Length: 101
Image (cartoon, rainbow, N blue to C red; front, side, top):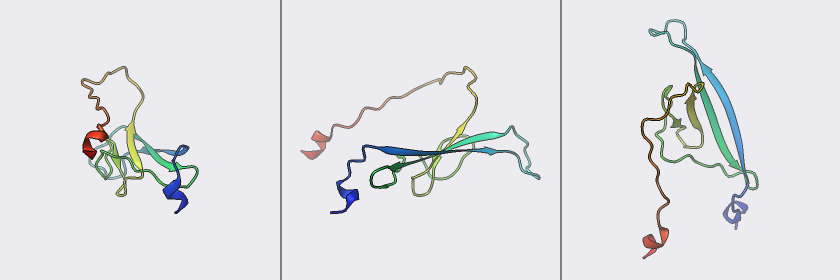
């Protein structure tokens, strides 16, 4: 059995980067610089990469997206301006014991 199959993935490493997107010459719309945070997670023991679930693949300057394999998370960020979210949802983990019956 491989090390990956037996690993419990208890220690994750975070690789983070920051990208600042600015208007390019010839852009039809000039905008403020947009900052993107890029994240990757890897098991420190067996080097297994982790996927980010629940987001569409691609790149957006306005909403979080993942890479085509789901292993990189791209998040647009900005300085906090005091604004709170207008709505929030919370989802509980599924009851896996019901799924087995």
